Length: 98
Image 1 (cartoon, helix red, strand yellow):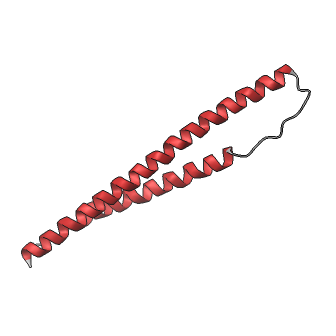
Image 2: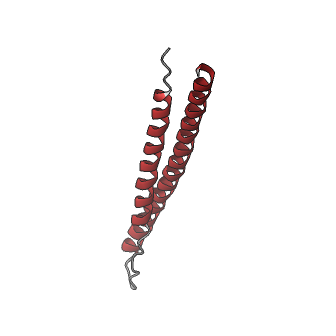
């Protein structure tokens, strides 16, 4: 009898890798959005309105990146649980057939 738990194990490792990539991308986006813009005095109201809209878009991007960061964390945790379950299952099968 052939014992193979590799597919579940590798699926878990793939989920961990995808989650880490998602966390890395989200962290990079958060870091790039965190750069402060210098304030300019005596601005026209049109320029001020554009800056407010820019800040609003920046905050939306930041919120989206925070969500991606959390999704990546959850994906890593789920992948680790799958990998752990595959390890335990394979260990049980080896103990049973040995």
